[in-house]
Image (tube, rainbow, N blue to C red):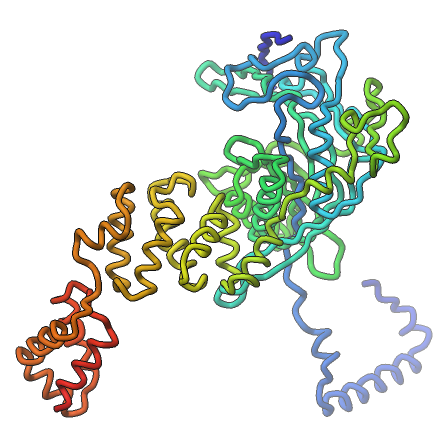
Length: 554
């Protein structure tokens, strides 16, 4: 049962005695040191000596992430209220979401399954028994004054995420790295504060309150914003492939908190700051890189980095202070008294008597339903089709593009390494220009395959093929064959006709012909271009060059 709820809230000592009581000893010691220094000065300096006088190591960034992924579920984590983006304010709020007295939480089985599936995909250890806790803090958009989460024993721990990004001197090399995942925990989301600056008030929308979240905590093992953004993009792909989170960052379905510090390698970690609620991978990279440089500047000027929570201002490209960082004791964690331990079972044989498989979360059943993960897809594309690794990232990263590519490859004899150029440069380029998804493409895989087959068999030239593609994009109902016939774009296969055209070009350019005969073979390219112009790009390049070489050599 839904209730309409709205509320507002504002939220060196030198001991000279040695010189007095032992002057002779001191004299001999000083004299001995001088002799040693002269001997050492005459010797070559060792590497260790040079190393000890070298400049201190540069400060480097250390980045850890806490990612809140909204679970793709029809209802909330502990209530039956629906989950929906952009619904009217406070229209998806149950009595429990509003924290009315006497209401109790009921755990959503779908959310548990989603967390287990995500944990399996990230090679986590799943705790067969996990516990819920109350995390206390007082914000206007948290009506109960606490959040139900998993602090003592989360549902999964000790996982890994392998991600890749472009690097190297020319940024053309795919670098692969792994970051450890400390834990995955289930928790409920808070509501949303709507700030009205014009009226100087803040209104509360509780539609999001109680929505199921998976918090994924990554160890501080990244060094810059680019690495962090690449890790988030890979996680986003995994979640979308699993169907456990839609991962739309613009709608808040994936929100990132970045813990950033700087230190010198080999020294203890520096004081960290937390940049909260970043909802874009691009902004995440910029926020982290800015924060690293800011902290370096503070330390190099003799200051101290404050342990605080900051926000990222995308307009200025800077992070700004929000509040002091809370410590664990500030949250006053306590066991959630209204929820029993969460138990998951390895297989059906371990189910207690009277408990049906549909009533419990069984790990083995979830594992059997795991789809092909993005990393496996990319490896398969590279090994099966011989494409470049960077192309596999593009195919897998764009929703539906990999399926489109493989459908084209099945219907044409053209090598996949040639097909990839058409799919990425032509098709994807046009899609992005018009902000269309792959499924909205006016050119189907079979239609593109037909066009590529005409090109592969020599019926049309490369320039003509691109011309046909443009026409197919504008007129989705027309086939490649129809456009070729209507615009007379097929290759000139009549040898006599091609000889006549080449002869006319040779006769009308005697200076160029003489230059070729004098040994300047580059001029031949000019004649080739003239023939292609007269044939509208339909002359066979091999035959045309052979004919021109014959006519200019005699």
